[in-house]
Structures are given as C-alpha cells and as structure tokens.
Amino acid sequence: MTWRRHISRDYSVRQWAVKDMKTILFGGNGNNINDDDLGNCTGVSSGGGGSGNDDDDDDDDDDDDDDDDDDDDLSTDTTTPPDGTPLPLAGQVAVITGASGGVGRSTALLLAQAGAKVCLGARRLEMLEGVVDEIRAKGGQAIGVQTDVSKREEMKNLVAQAEKEFGPVDILVNNAAVWFFTMMTSLHEDDWETMININCKGVLNGIAAVLTGMVARNTGHIVNISSDSGIKAFQGVAVYCGTKFFVEGVTVSLRQEVAKYNVKVTSIRPGYVAAPERPQKDKEAYALCGPPADLEVLEPDDIAQAVLYAVTQPKRVAVNEMLVQPLGQPL
Image 1 (tube, rainbow, N blue to C red):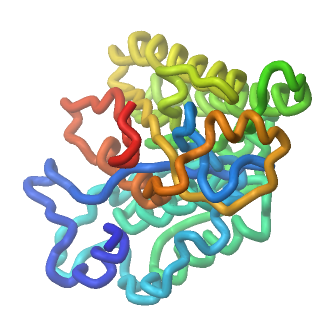
Image 2 (image 1 turned 135 degrees about the vertical axis):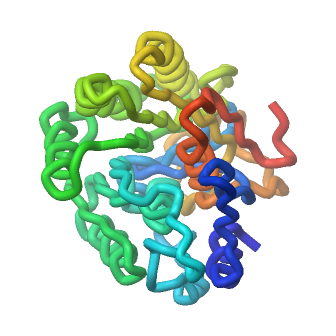
C-alpha cells in the first residue's frame, strides 16, 4: 500500500500527524521520475548506475503509473483536515518542473494535498493540464505553464506566472531531467547534449529564477532531484552520471552560500524508479546498467514523499541530502 493510498483512505483519522506544526507526514519511500525522460529505459527510470530518478521534464513515464483508482478516494478538501488543523504547507507557493508525469506529478499532487499552491512546468501541455485539473478537482490550487527548462526565459516565465497567480515562491523542486543508456564509444553526441541542456542548464535556470527573491525575503527552499549516479559513477551512463555529479556539486556550493539567508538546499538521490518501457538505442549500455529483472523498483510516490519530508521540517532543520533506493539495490 503506497502512502498516497494510505492517506486517501485514512485522511479522516488524521493521517497528517501534525504535532505543534513540527512533525509532519511520515511514511513511504522516496523516488523520482521526471518529465524529460525521453527515449530512456525499459520500465524504470535510471538514477545512475542503474539507479533511477529522472523522468523529469515532461515525465513521459508517468502515463498511468500513479493513476490508481484510489485517487478517486482522495478528499475533495485539500486545505484543511476534518479536525480543522492547518495543513503543513498552507499558504506556501511551490514551483515544480517536469510535473506532467512520474515523480513530478506525484510531487505536485502531494504538495497540493499538504496545502501548497503549486505552479507546474513541463513541455507536454496536454498532460500538464491533466495534472492541474486533477489537483483542482480535489480542492487544490494549481496552474500549469508549458516550459522547457533548458531555456532560461521559459524558466523565468514559469516563476513569474507562479508569483503573479499565487505570490512569492517558497519552494522550487528542480525535477526535470532526462537520461539515456549509452556507451561513450557509441558516440551518441546528440543525447549527450540533450542531457547536459536539461539536467545541468535546467537546474541552473531554475535556481536563477528563484534565488534573488528567496535571498531578499530571507527564506526559501530549493530541492534538486539528483540521483545515486551523482555520487557513484557507472558504466553505460557516463554522461548522465556527469550531469548528476554536476548537480551535486552545485547543490553543495549553493547550500554553503545561501544558508546565511535562511535558504535551504536539498539534494534527493533516487535509485531505480518505475517508468514506462521504452526502446533502447544502446543495448550494450543497457545490459551493463539496466535494472535486474527481479528488482522491485521504487514508485514515483516514494520520491514525492521524500520531497514532502524535506520541505515540511521546522525552520531550524535542514535536510541536506537524501539517498532513496530500492531495498534490493544497496549502493
């Protein structure tokens, strides 16, 4: 039973578990699937070394993976639990990239359930609008903006639309990413460039769009969805690993710079995450780095819960890093 299903069925008995507004929402795993996972893996998203975490930008992998019938059980009031206790993210504004499917979609749904006003970005407009409609149908507040995170002006526009509709951005989830299994000797240079543009430039563009405002307001939280491939390199995904090592380096340096402004910076590193099957360009790379057939991989909701845990901690608590992997895939 996933945590999302758990909350849908037990919402009325205070599954929010709020205590003095400090201890909020425990349970579940953590994993990620992002929106730009184009042409990647067969049935899993790879976070590196066969780990998994990005189907970001447009979360192609999303399809029906998270769309269980249990969604119909969710409360239609996502702003206040039955006992009147304020939700943990009530009044906060969150921007989430790669939000049309997978981890991005799951994160959007979960943060909205926790009371956040969410602004969602992704390239696939029709799927993005579907997520927005889903959130609104459950009583949440959401808008969607078609966004290519590799384009600086589009990322700035996403944040500008969030601020116009809801106010200053409190939380940014840099979720959009792509990965390809490819041996370096195969020279899939176009794929290399795509990964660099989305996984590296996309994260920088997201940071740039919110950082000045967060520093000026002396508050904010940036969550970068990285990968276990950002802390250990693997054959068959060299460039993807390189992009995630980049994300890790930027995250640590940024955290050191902005802590004095009360801005938190979190890295979440998923292992293999469930994703729709896709044809493999490079069979050799997939054979080296693909997930074992018997591995029970993570679900998008798992990573969404990791995000929720990080962003609902007391002001004094900084969750800097989270490594979330399938039980059968120890790093």
